[in-house]
Every structure is written in structure tokens, then in C-alpha cells.
Length: 454
Image 1 (cartoon, rainbow, N blue to C red):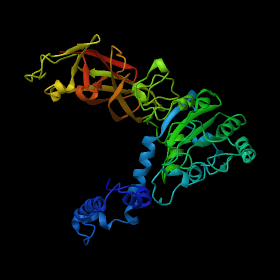
Image 2: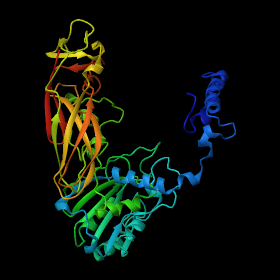
Image 3: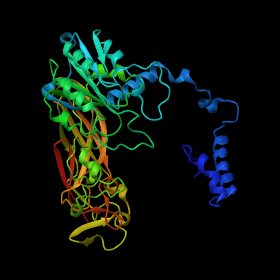
Image 4: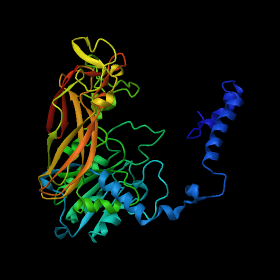
């Protein structure tokens, strides 16, 4: 490689040369490539109109526009995982005292993920909440995210008892997940779960649990506990995350994010991380990986996310049948036979389809906001074969679009579907094939069925 992001080459290149594993000319070749790119970028020349990036500095980063962009990323990315009896949003007129519990509640460092630059005037969760509710108190409960001790539990309990509403910040930071550091559990670190449970047992009302971090967390206990009314995943919210959290809690912004990964249960850690087979294998108790193949129980699945309102969907337009042989493009299937039958399956190899472009179609969907609050959310369109063929995806994402819909109104949207790309899958020989027969397109609880025939 020409570039190594880290210290590996610094530590081992000299030894590799001495052992004859690489030659000095290999290094010279890599340097030639590196400097060639830098010269093309003009990094060694005086700044000109064509090299605007060489004049960028802190003043270009710490702007109102960039902070608003950072805030919007948090708003759109936060995922509401649980909201029993519409506990959220809170009403400011009914909340005079909030307690924020957790090591991350007043820690600006915890807001940034891996490779984070120096933030511009970061807003902690505590500072952001105080702008909404001046009487906001904080208690760490744990000394840090690792939470190896219960020494701070007493202070946290007393703070929680006095408050009208309690928000517990739990989850992960870079001491738990980063490069060169593998997590050994999917549970909350240390005694964090004990802290959440004990706080939930002493509060006047059910608590709000906010989860930080980039990876999945098994919060099955919170999902099932009625003393925990709401669960939000805010990830690594960055420099203005503390501003956005109260906006969401008090309903100034209606959350509409969806999980980009499956949250597996703790039992999934028994699966060897070196076994990277995607497909499930029941014979050896292997559950598979990713939402496309995973057959085990999930805490929360890929694409899951709630809102303060209720959305419903309706397919307005989509094909009932796609016929390869009646395509307007001559010679759509370039080789004979037109389709192959094997193991009881009819399919077409994608490489044998001469014009995948001619198969592309649009799906038109109506998104209705049946609730009382305006909102935007990510609409996800999935596809699967009705035949549920072993080894083929349980479902796969075709496309998504963020849609704003006012309360009591509906919005129409369109997603293009490329069957060769979005509905094919690799067979046991590693060739991409398109199954013939019935297929389902799915959005929410709505299903549109159509047939692909040769």
C-alpha cells in the first residue's frame, strides 16, 4: 500500500527491508504516487483561486452555518426506540426540575466519535437542558463510562428523587469502542445497567434513557421495563448534541431516524467474530449476519425507529408483472437458455441480461401522517422473493428517502427500483441471479406483490 493510516509502517518497514520482504524501490514507488497526488492538488504552490481548500482554517469551520448543519445531523440521526404511552414529548409547562444522571451528562469529550477534531464551543447535555429548564441538576452516578464502581450511586439517587423528570445518559464512548479495541460484551459497560435500574426504582415518573455510542447495545432490560418510558439512541452527537437533545425531548423536533444496524442480543457474542459467513446455518446453530440473513432474535432491527406521530403507507403505482421476453429492448436475454432451472428454482443470471436499464421501474408511495404532529422520517423500501429460497436474503433494502409530512396530510414519493441491482443475490457459485416468480416490495406494513417472468 502507498499509505498506512497508523504507525504500522513506521514500526515495521525497516525490518521488512532488512529481511528482504520489500525493496527500497517499493518505497520510492509509493512516495512517487503520494507526491504526485499532492502536486496535482497544488499543495506546494501558492494558494490560487483554484486551490481554495489551502486557505481554509478554524474560521471556516466554527461558523453558524456549520453548527446548524451539525445540529441537523443530530436531529435527523437520533432514533426513538421506545415511547410507552407517548411519554415523550415532554411539556415545558409541566416540568420545573429535571435531573440528568450519567457520566456523559456533563462531558463534552464524550460527544465526539472516532477521528473527531477539536469542537467549537461544545454544548454538553447539561448545558443544553438548562436552556430549556433552568433548574436542571446533574449527578454522574458513575465516575466514567466504564462505571466500575457504585460509589456515586447515592448522589444520583438523591438527585433523581427530587426531580420531576429524570433523564439517564448511558452507553458507550471511545474508551469502549475504537480502532484497536474490541468490545467483549454488547451490554452496557460496567455497572451502568445497575445505575439505570436503581434510578428507575426511585423516581416520581418513568425515566427517559438516552444511549450514546456508535455500536449496538443490548438494552433488552430497558425495552421490557415499564419504569423506563422512553429510549433514544443519539450516537455521537458532536459539538451541538447537547442543544438538540432537549429539542427532541420537548417536541420542538419530531424524531424520525432509523437504525442503520441491527442491535443484537448479548447471546450474539457467542458467535465467533472470525466466522464471517453471512448466511445462517441451522445445522451448526449459526444465526447469520446482518438484517439480510440474520435469523436470530434482535433487540431492535435494522431500519427500526419510532416517531411522535403515526405514519401509514400506500402503494400508488408499481408493476404487476415484469416480462423479460416481452421487453421493448431486443435480445434482452443475451444467451440461451433464456432462464435456468436448478434445484427447483427458476432464475436468470444477471450477466445474461443484456439491458438491465430497461427493467428499471418507479414505485410511487403515499405517506400519510395520521397523528397530530408534523414530522419528517426516513421511508425505507425493502424487497424479497415470495418463495423464501434458502440462502437468499430474507429481505434487502432497495432505497430510502426522507419525507416531511404535515399532521393530517399525505405526501407522495417515488423510489426507482433496478431489479438487476436491488433484487438480485449471489448464489452458491458466487454469481448474481435474479429469481423468477413472485416478489414483494415492502414499506412499513404495506406489501406490493408482482411477478418477474422470462
